[in-house]
Amino acid sequence: MTSLPTKTDRKLGLVIDLDTCVGCHACVISCKGWNTQNYGAPLSDMDAYGAEPDGTFLNRVHSFEVTRDAAPPMVVHFPKSCLHCDNAPCVTVCPTGASYKRSEDGIVLVNESACIGCGLCAWACPYGAREMDGAEKVMKKCTLCVDRIYNDNLPEEDREPACVRTCPAGARHFGDLSDPESDVSKLVAAREGFDLMPEQGTAPVNKYLPPRERDALDIPDLASLCDPAPEATGFLGWLDRALEKL
Image (cartoon, rainbow, N blue to C red; front, side):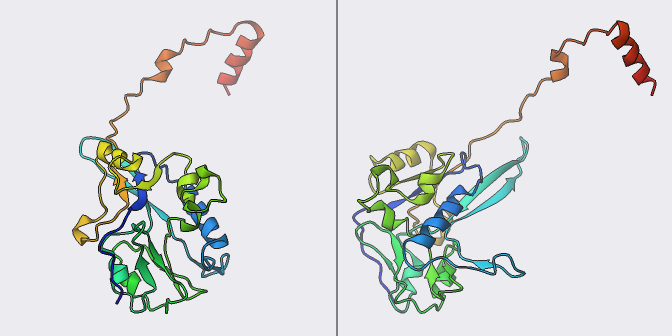
């Protein structure tokens, strides 16, 4: 079985703002596009327009309607991908060492050349963050776009995960969560960021920011704000009265 590093120099990860995410799926599409064209084997799409389509995605957005006692229901969009856990069970169950966590930045990756497609890591992950690629028969997962964030050939503003770069609502943030002075750490502290399913003991690096409370909207009677239309006279008045009788 594969062992985890005792410590990592950094903890690169995502902070996702559930208050800001609008569920547009731009992050899903950009993730699919970048990881199909660049790092590792392409993400497959099989029989895309047939009766039984099958494809691989590393990032998904789930939408939930949340009921509340003192306010109307609200919709929460919940993006989910690999959380690059400190105590990653997907790594420790891997029989070949294909799944591993890097000591330099804490990113969890898969060596596709060593993966035998046994699926043990998918069974061990409590977040459902791993997918077996139907064409390549190897396990796929979020890489935090490791081929972008260290790529000196890209402009500096592009050296972040594709999902973060693409998000039109600014709901996704990337940085070093081991540094209390980093922007992401300050954001987590200010907004009471939380771990997903902390009871699992996986210590995920990625954090979520809770949605803010939304009160019932006090919508005025718009009709009362409008002046009544003046009564038409002459030909238009006659036409209006004639049409009312039809």
